[in-house]
View 1 (cartoon, rainbow, N blue to C red):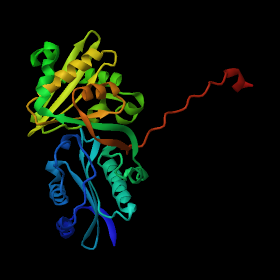
View 2: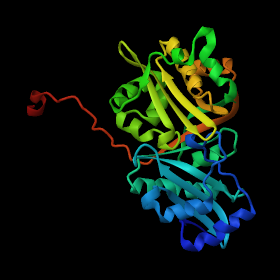
View 3: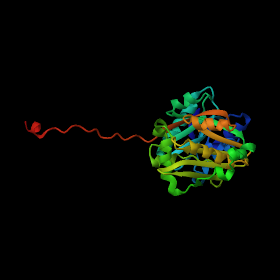
View 4: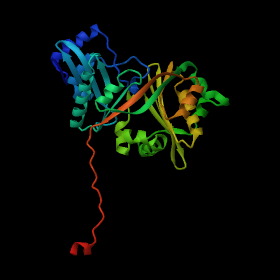
Length: 325
């Protein structure tokens, strides 16, 4: 009989047997872009038993000693937002298994105080409809652009400038820049995306993704007359570089500055990757002009676990004389 539950010691047989058949992990997280690093079911099971230290939550569906499906999730910026980082569909003939796992994730996330669960999967991977049937909805499409990093350092010397010149105007991000960065996010991101992802400052902090181990991440900002006009976060993991950025839509010069400065800083990496949101055609065009090509397309889905509170409806006041009549 197939059942959905958190990982138990008795599930080790199914998890070890998983090595006999290789099923892909369909969940894509920002900090694993460009690498083959992907949580293994046995690894997630062990981490589940030490979840007080790892913050990982794992659910499994087995039939006898056979793995049918597994989902693991972890927090994003805070415990108010989770993301699925392992999604294994070993029962490809029965979409109900995956739906049951994801529905249980939503229930347990709500019980643990999480308000949203995020998931990124391939746009053409065949699982979008199944995930949506479990209560998730697509709110964003992303394109993964990549280029060989060996020539990236040359981007900083275009038009006679140097890497240092390309970085002019940038300063290191500090905690005091958190709210100004959120304001920049509101200018950069279309309202339909913000409404789902982060309509408030608190939700934006909770929804922020990890880009790499903390020591490998750096952030810079560009100041403007009315606040921040640009922000970029770079991450290095081995010989892989990743970055994401935002710029005031009214300042295309800042967008160029951020792209060139980022490529100059990541010039030593053998490969450089960036997840470009579909709404930012300007960023995509700039990267393609600098040698980036598209590798994959993803959709990002979200499920809100918190029940929305209905605001009281206002009604016109009844005149006093009417009441006395």
